[in-house]
Image 1 (cartoon, rainbow, N blue to C red):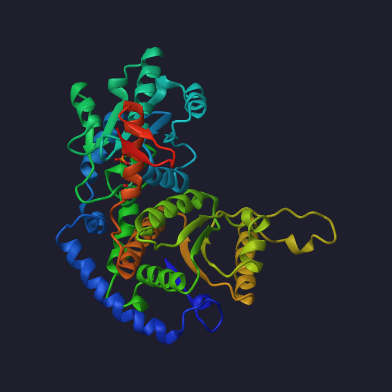
Image 2 (tube, helix red, strand yellow):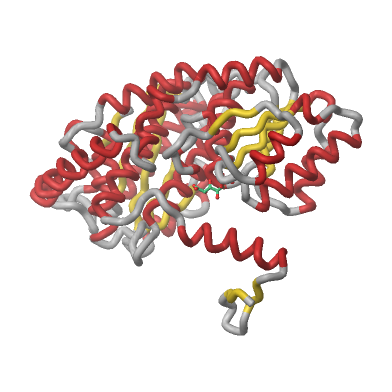
Amino acid sequence: MDLDVGNALAAVAEPGVPRDALERLDDRVAAAHERIERGVANGEFGYASLNLPETADTAAVETAADRIGDVDHVILVGIGGSALGAATLADALAGPDAAELHVLDNVDPAAVERTLDRIDLASAAVNVVSQSGTTAETLANFLVVRDAMADAGVDWTDRTVVTTGDAGNLRDLADAHDLPSVSVPDGVPGRFSVLSTVGLLPAALLGVDTDGLLAGASAAREKLGPSLFDSPAYAYGALAYALDVRGASMDVMMPYAEGLETFAEWFAQLWAESLGKDGLGQTPVRALGATDQHSQLQLYRAGPHDKLVTFVGVDDRPDVPIPSADLEGLDYLSGASLGGLLDAELDATEASLAAAGVPNLRVQLDAVDAESVGELLFSMEAACVLAGELYGVETFDQPAVEWGKEAARGLLRGDRTLDEGDSLEVE
Ligand code: PA5
């Protein structure tokens, strides 16, 4: 993975980061790196995520995947960090013959019903994932799925693997029904868990090369060091932070690869839930090239300069030549390929933003394959941890999310009410 920061510097962009400011920021990166390495070495909460390339329990993943065997459908019941990593891996890396992944995260009854109606449950496995084991949406959806399986005459206890922590309702359910389970490792918050059992088990069920993923992540881990000039991950985190404090309060994540569309969603959670604290944080926005060139780009180029646009480009793409049109005027397409056109769209868009002084960064991947995706995901996690140190926020907690979870449970239990100001109070 390479990172090009040229279009984010003050020489071309407004806001942009002056070279000397970057040099000064590098001292803070060195101090942050020291703090991060200490946390990683001690396995501290959150920092332990950056150990996953070495510590992920691949044996447990393999055993659980083997036990399930071949299925046509994998129903992933989980939400937030317990779903987005798996969805990202599936969309980026599952091959054409892989089982289909169905993510039940939301509790919209129409969507859940529609999903269950179109799955042959006799050929489905369920991976129910909740780190806390107490998330209402996940537990509710699991109860619905297991009933649907029972109604279809399927032994759901034989087809379910639980991914959870040591305690909680889900752990109790797993114990009560003797369900096979894998553990969420200690010290790994949901949104940092894609390279743990949480993301790796569904990936393995879809035949994704999990070793390649971890190898890519390991390569990115090796590159972390005391200077942003030597580490693309830290350079990304430092630049995004430096641009935010200069006015680029939004970060538009715009991959030019459909397989990475869900990655932008994963990134949005990582960035928002980790850094959105104490009145600080950069708002992540999801976009997809070239599709969103035809909708949002007008704003990005000509609207307020309050955005950083992050492009993700890909070197190697499948070769789909564009057939000749036998039409004058379409000569420029002749001999080109869809990938070549997509790359040209990216280059042109990047140049157009640079010409307008809109700060942008380019992340360039070798390919959308297991190694590159592992490297990308790990790098963005490291970037986020670094940015959290620079902002001085508690990167690994999510009090606003927990507040909402507990409040919703309280409303259902009937021991909480909404007052007129829409705030919640315990009765
Ligand atoms: O990143 C996080 O911690 C959250 O987004 C959680 O992943 C999400 O709320 C789901 O929590 P749990 O895995 O406990 O069900």
